[in-house]
Length: 77
Image 1: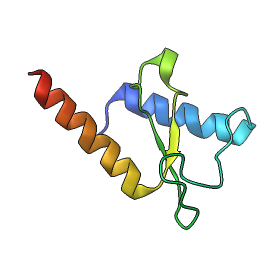
Image 2 (image 1 turned 90 degrees about the vertical axis):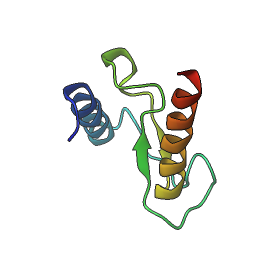
Image 3 (image 1 turned 90 degrees about the horizontal axis):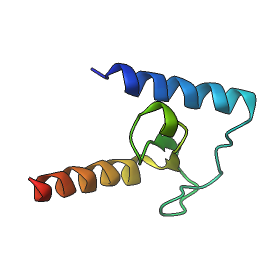
Image 4 (image 1 turned 30 degrees about the horizontal axis):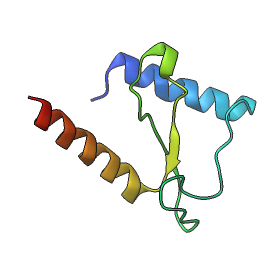
């Protein structure tokens, strides 16, 4: 289940894409692959002021990004 801030961030990205104020690239912004559907990765959190701070990445890079974040948080504990 996603939280309210995460849902608002996802909806803000969808609205920005529809309006054209945010443009999805043709390739993953992490590895450069053009063969996969791209997902928006909120790399800086879901707060209102950062909700459009996204990288468009392939599924593999998206999962890697979350794994790296979990590892970083575990090290900080």
